[in-house]
Length: 137
Image 1 (cartoon, rainbow, N blue to C red):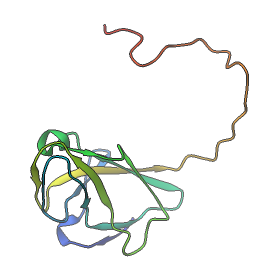
Image 2: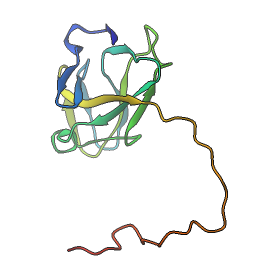
Image 3: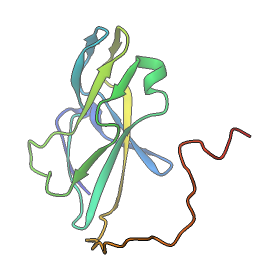
């Protein structure tokens, strides 16, 4: 994939199936703040693919930050020189993210094909309950 680095330290690093991204800047934040973490890259995602951006498993524990859109979906039309990837976050405690800290990860996947829907009165399947209804053990 083509990538433009807006900061030399921001080259993504692949670890397993996901690719880590780092903070391009240092952010000092207080509880209750919402802000965007600049990831320092613009990436041209191949036609027919999209990127899924999610926090690393350690992000909340280390920084007290949650990604405000749960997961980010970046389609391949967001591929201009100045379409810089960002991670929108909300701070649940005071803290600091340092320039170069690994803060989130992404992977690419094929786009979902267009889906058509057929309205029916009955789905003809057994109800499963959901939301923990199958018990704890």
